[in-house]
Length: 85
Length: 291
Image (tube, rainbow over all chains, first blue to last red; front, side, top):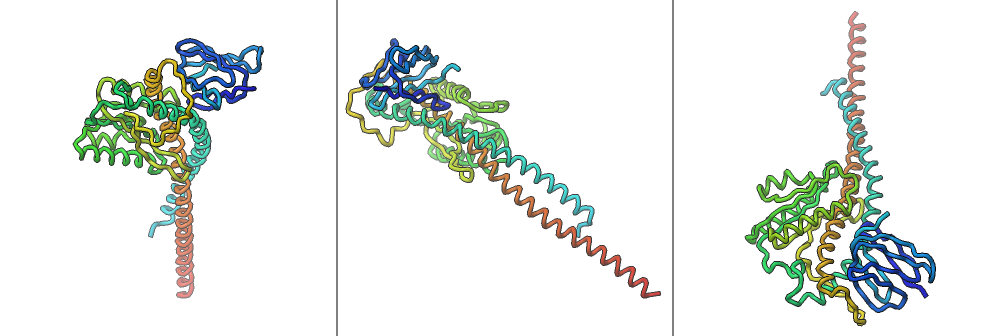
C-alpha cells in the first residue's frame, strides 16, 4: 500500500519514491494524497511539501515554489518550479 | 620555392594552431558530457508539462474564454522570432545554421507581407541579423558572463516575451535553436511558441473525471506562461549541448587538418634541406675536379 510519488523540477527529476502520504500546498489550501486518490489537478503556492514515508513517521519537508500537482492512476506527480536546498 | 627558414616558421605556426584546436576539442568534450546530462535531466518535466497542457488545451480549447496564449490574438500580422545563439565561436557552423534557419523563416514571412521582429539571445547571431534586417531587433539578451545557463535565464527571457505579448507587440512567436541529436549531428530548428500550437496527438483521456482546483481555465492560464518558459529552457539546454557537440566535431577536424598540413610541410622542408645539401656537395666536387 504505497503511493507512487514523483517530484520534478525543470532541471531534473528530484525524487521518485513509494511513500505513505504527501501533503501538498495547493493554491486553494493544503491537501494530502494517499494511495488510490481520485484524479485531481491543482496549482501550488509557495510552501512546504510534506512527505510521510510511512504512517506516523515524521514528515520530510521540502519547500517548493510554484508549480502544480497532478494525481492520476499512476500516482502523484508534483511539478515544482523551484525547490529549496 | 619557400626558403628553409620560412618553412620552419610555418610549421611552428601550424603546430601552435593545432595545440589550440586540440585543447578546445578536449574542453568541448568535457563540457559536452555535462551539457548533455543537463539536457536529458530536464526532459521529464517538459514531457509531463506538455502532456498536461495538451490534455487541458483539448478540453478548454474550443471555448471563447480560452486564454490568449492558447487561442492567439486572432491575427498573425507581426511575428517575433526568438533566436538562441551562443557567445563563442570555434563551433563550426553551429551559430550560422541557427541564424540561417531564422533568416529563411523571416524572409518567408516577409514575402507574405508580415512584419518580422527579432529577440536575440547570445552574442553571435547579432551582426548578421542586424545587417540583414536593420532596425528589426527589438530586444537582446546578454548571456556573456553566465557560466551555466539555467532556468533563471529562461524565466527572464520568457518574462520579457510575455510582457511584449501582453503589450500587443507581436501576434505569433517562434523559437529558433539547435536540437541536439548527437555529437556529430545538431539540427537547427524553429518552432511556434505563441500561441501554443494545437496538440498533434491528444492523449486519450483516462475516462475518470479529473477534479480541478482552481478550475481548468485558471490552471491553464497559470500553466501556459510556464510552458513558454520551459520551451525556452529546453531550447537553451539543447543549444548548450549542441554547441559543445559542434565545437568538438569542428575542432577534431581542425586538429586533423593541422596534422596533415604539418606532415606535408615537413616533407617539403626535408626535401628543400636535402636539395640545399646536394647543391653544396655538387659545388665542392665540381670545384675539386676543376683543379
